Image 1 (spheres, one colour):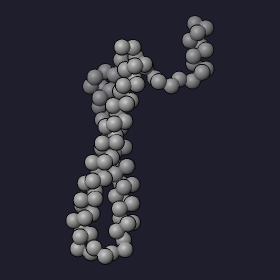
Image 2 (image 1 turned 120 degrees about the horizontal axis):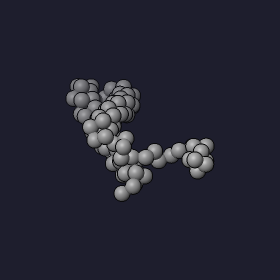
Image 3 (image 1 turned 180 degrees about the vertical axis):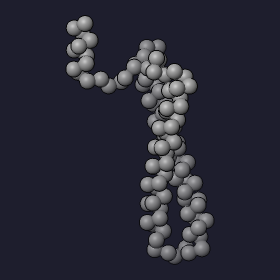
Image 4 (image 1 turned 90 degrees about the horizontal axis):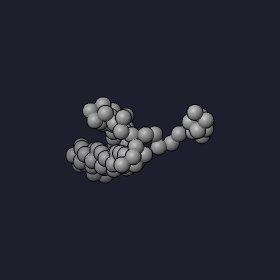
Length: 98
């Protein structure tokens, strides 16, 4: 496999892991919210709290995702095995001239 293919596979796997983390944190947040708000089932704050849990799950999953990517990059020396997927056109024209 070439470096571009390695980069693409890593990005796809990392995206799936990020979505799984988001779902996991959202479900845990909903369970905690259900436990806490179960005492007041008719509260009008429940939809707002669900939105807060959702935004919190997004922030937490992004934080954990970025830490996991940094850890995996260092542990498996991925900088040597991957190539940037997107590069500016200016850089490509320089590479052709050299």
